[in-house]
Image (tube, rainbow, N blue to C red; front, side, top):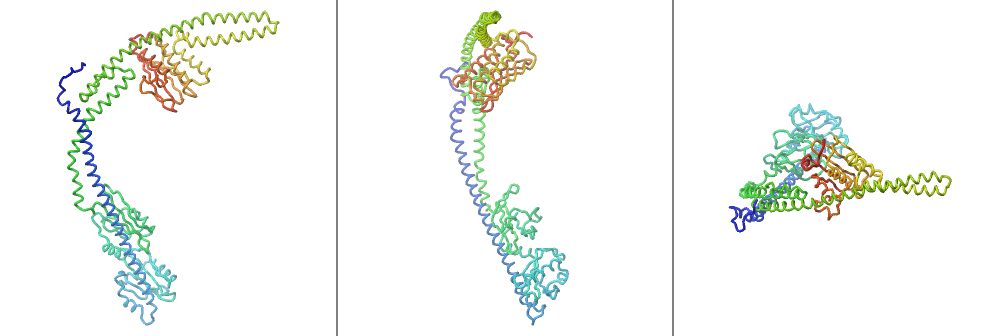
Length: 590
């Protein structure tokens, strides 16, 4: 595509797509983001402060309520201790003592009773059926009271009154082992409910529970349905350990504040839970909607950002990827349009022209390199044939003459020793020359084919350098052109040479796979690996001359060279020769 003439007018909207878009992206969009950040950040700080304030308020309320409940429990223990002291009065009967203690009826709503030291009921207040059908655990409580007579009052765990079907607690006390036992019964749930009503204001969705040391729920306030697992509710374990504090619990989409505190002397746990945002003022909830006025601005910013990503960022990323493919020799990749704004189109057109110039230069350079390589291989072939046909044959003849001379001079030991040394040197020279001729040009490549040549190459390198090289041949072998087979052989030779010189590998592998439409040559090792240069242009500066030669040989025959390597993770070289190269005479035969 031709470049527009100098001085021509830009397309409509081109200026907006250039400078104005940059102004929007680098000024207006960040400014909008900063305003949104400040707005929502201030609201977040406000909410965090309200959250902390509600938590502190609930913790103080839980402590106050637990302290009030504890004081009333201490008062009941002390009241029963005083009633026990009055039971030893010889003037008043048990019934008269209870009548004189009527002021305790509000604290002991189930009634008071006096038992004899042997556990017989002597007098009581309240319902007769209740005291006549007192639970069996009351007997053990009376025994405990006698054992601790004169020391302290004892109390029972929460029990279920079968008549009224609610929790109750017995408190018993005795002056001494010879005195009657004073007993009082009261509902802990009623006491707790009254104290919570005086100390805590439970809002909508709030819950307060009291749990005993054995995880029995005494009362639950604020929720119509019993909480599942309330005896193991968050905060219960901490309060039972005597701790006070606040934790935050995520419930569905709301965050609840859980305040807990122990209730002494019973060792109970008081837990208050409520959604903290329901406590915040309606004004705060209204101000949370204020940032919505920036929503249209944000939407416009997002649309502009999407446009910038669609028309600028993505085309530039695609163009970058195409340019990377260009560095590896794929000159057609850059020609497909990447879209985007006009500036990107112009940049791509410039790269297309540049790629065309590079392609032409590469074709000329490749032809020159091909001619040099062909001349080099022909000279190697000539030297190999001369060494094989002349020098090696002469040495073989010399070796035979030495053997004949040994037969004639068998009686002369000194001559035999000298002849044996000459024979050994001759045979060593023959082996060295044969190895040199194979390195110069594998003469058996044309006669036996590529597979046999690669197998012999792997065997010779393995024997010479003591590294195990696994060779595998897959698929049905077919002959390629002489230039192609020689290039594949040289690439395998260079790849294994790199393994020996640089990889520090314990083993390597050489595979050749004949497929229907391509031939794949693979060299891999378990060595130290290396960092792959980003493009073939960096092979020479980074010292990878062997890889550069392999890359050039692959391009000469129309093959693709793929390199995979990582530090301490080995290296894999894959040369892929496709059937499409047949048009250039790479394949022939069946």
